[in-house]
Image (cartoon, rainbow over all chains, first blue to last red; front, side, top):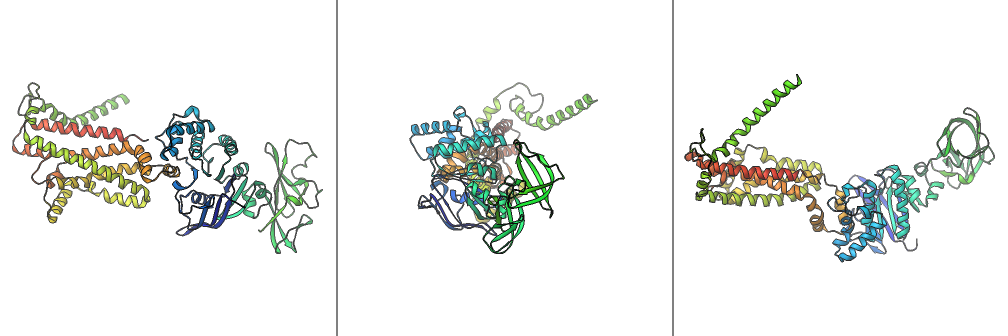
Amino acid sequence: MSDPLLRLRNISKRYRETQAVHPLDLEVGRGDFVALLGPSGCGKTTLLRMIGGFLPPSTGSIEIGGQDVTALGPEKRNTNMVFQGYGLFPHMTVAQNIGYGPRIAGRDPEQIDLEVVRMLNLVHLGAVADRLPAALSGGQQQRVALARALVMRPSILLLDEPLAALDLKLRKAMQDELKALHKAIGGTFIFVTHDQGEAIDLANRIVIMEAGRIVQQGTPEDVYRRPASRFVASFVGDANMLPAVRKGGEVAIGGGRLPSPGPDGAVLVVIRPDDVTLGGAEPLSLAGTLTESRFMGPYLRLVVTLADGAALTVHRPSGVDGPALPGVGDAIALGLPAAACSVVAP
Amino acid sequence: MIARSQVVWTAFGAAALVFLLSPLVLVVFFSLSENANATFPPGGMTLHWYDVLFGNPDFWKALGNSAIITLCVGLVSMISGTLAAMALARSGPKVANGVIALVTMPIMLPPLVLALALATGYSSLGLPLGLATVIPSHLVFTQPFVILVVYAQMSGFNMAILDSARDLGAGPWTIFRTVILPIIRPTLIGATLMAMAVSLDDFIITYFTIGGGMTLPTMIWGMLRKALDPSINALGSLVLVATIGTSLLALRLTRYRG
């Protein structure tokens, strides 16, 4: 990135015995919508809190817009955070919550009123402006927290598991709303999540963390189609992993060879259930027995047991007409499109 | 059957209540009766004993002392109790529980032992007894109330609230003024009133640490020893009303869980 908005250099965090975040570098460009994705305890929230200034890093430096902010607290940084529990002020109305930041900054009261109204409209909360947070639904509280942060016009908006507390339906609606909001105001958003579906849906860049380290970053398609490790392959989406051996830059699988540069030895070939084809037309193909077929709504979930006992999951759209499927217990041939296969260390 | 046992238990409860509360009622009752011996028959109703009490210069001295002590104790225990509670809420529960156990020890000690310890302490330090020794002595056993009540609320405090205030640009003092104080205010006032009520009606510790002066409770004690002056009932009634009033107000305020 030529001119990143946020630049982390050699950032790490150590608590007495545990290394929460190992030294890492990260750059975020202006206008990016970045997901920090990983299982709980991977250090993603620690990293977010260091970016926001709530935790001093053990090593390294943080630059925002070319300015070193490592030593500045959150009150002096042009970042704003939407907290996991929202952190709304229980004794202030929705409008007072949103106006809090501008008010203590000593801005002109009339200007503040205008800003608050603008924010209330942006997050569709005009009707509840005079209610206390306790009288709001979870989704509404979430939107107040968003408006309260956005009214500060942060150069980076940080969101800590923003949708985790909402039920599924509301979460989907808020995902759309967040995306629309990002588009409308054109800001830079960084959010933490453990939900890969949420990360893929919202972000234009996903940073995957495992045990305090960044293990892969890229577009949602990158990390889904070309996982860099077994962990990424299994954490992002469903994956079939077939053990194989690499020799001389090629991996032997499915009666053929898959070009794959790298040292000789055992590897795993990763292929998504929706990429496996039925029938033996592909150069790389496998034969097995259909052992399970389940209707999942939009797709059929097939489980095929190979000769060596390994099981392969295949997804097939349920609505399309095609060659009739063999019955459970019958032999079935599977094709592995070479472009859809990636090779990772076991 | 259910009805009968219900009647029995209700009667038992009522009898217990009468036994517990009747002395208090009698104090108020005799403070208003014409009979000077505080015996039955009470005779007519009169405010005469209140007149006698208000004509006694000692009463005004004692009232003044009680007011000074109670107000000072309330103010100091409110401020220091809040500071202590905030510090405790910030330290982990392990440290907090240890400190609380230590700080609340004075309320668990027999008051007589505490009074003796304080009196001995002051005399070994060579401090002359007076209001200046009564006030810190009262703080020893009133402050724990404030710390306990305010800490209970602070420890249930959603810390994300403080983080978000900081995130929105507030410094420590602004956070306290605009966020913490408005949220804990009712609890804080309630806890302070509780501390003041406890201070106002304390006798033992005041008696041991005040030297020659007197407060309302020590004045009652002094009057009891001399002669049975019926205006003592008037004084008792006043202390009763003041203490119960502050306590009720305190309970009402601390019930708020915002």
